[in-house]
Length: 617
Image (tube, rainbow, N blue to C red; front, side, top):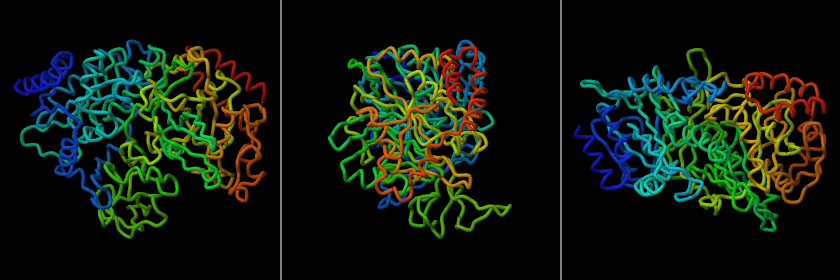
């Protein structure tokens, strides 16, 4: 019990009047039996120490300090590279509370199972106590947590992704509450057992949430989405339940600001499933013609929004995170120059390739691949490398990531850490759809907009388990992240309409529609600003639109096509915006699968919206 005494002593010194934290850490130390305990202070010296531990273990290498100051490349175990949805559980009191779209287990059953796994799981390792804040410290929208982990990778990443360290303890004491986050890689170092660079336990991985206890327990995985418990686990799964109980919203949404040439700022949120362009859209650079005219975009956040009714009658949103955990492949100076500038320093790269001069590379970063790389497995790689079946081998994992401080972003919004949050005028939903969905349309009203969000479909990507390319329903891009019954979640969205005077307008976009030949119909990237400008003007001035069976849509003349008019003609735009009754009837049939699954708890307003759409078609 010496280690337990040490941590209690440290906690008492830093937070003498907060016994709940001391008691919980002592309880977990007794259960997991670590060799040492470290109470994280969030300092630069500590960060350097954690990164060096990763290098010393063989999991990481320092990058060229002239090219990427204070930056690391980390390689994970190939079995631990993405969120594990099949091993993610919502352990609410009843199965009905979790709903049919979540994996459920009775809390007492899961806790018993986990107690057996956590028993002695940190032997030979250090237990890190990580106090952190989600959102600007002191904000009325912020929340506080403490993660216990045996992974220096988690400590280093949590320092980027949250406001982490000693300063948070005072606020935890003041609020008299924190979300408990327990994590272990699940690989104890028993006597005589040699460590490995990336310890994990794929056969016994569990990512479990106990909403009623405000508790997260994650075992066996070191990957970001499973191990950085402030991220999806807290900021969405647990926070969505807190939001339901307290009258706010925790959403899988980016937040950006658009400043028009007259200086008026409009803030917009957007919900896209993982790896569908959220980070690119959050950091969008207007085309030259719009930029020269004075249009500007600033980034508040690229992944998660916490939204509360404000005293001014508007929804106010904060980004609860302090960093970007972005998908690397496809990110380039062509697709997202601001992300590329954000990762110039102080960044942790995971499962990307290493260049011969100590820099990083991934597919899509440049047109031509380097002649030689060390791939994400640590092996030599050249552009003609093939596997045993003659198939080309990727240098970087499709779900490889960068973790970078949000403050690095050149277009970070001046109000991104405003404790009051930013006022939201528009909400956008969208997915990766090759057919059916037009480039952009607007809902008729809030209830119709909730229906659009509830029926979002997208082709699956490498960020989740499953077959890439398969279309699945992903309501509000929250299917893997909602911490309670999705039917009740829709009802909560409908109820939020009554909490503010100024309701955001709701839109649906689809950058990924293709021709029958498989070619993208819309250029995307910076040209998405043309759609965003119309959305903002609809909020500000009521810009022109046509009423259709599915919602309000712009005509060709309504979008600013300067500089793009030779590529996207009026005829080409009509194809982007085409509404095929046959395709939409198929869409309605596909929606049935989700609606039938949720039918018992599905708000009747959404069923009526579906019937209205059917009659309009």
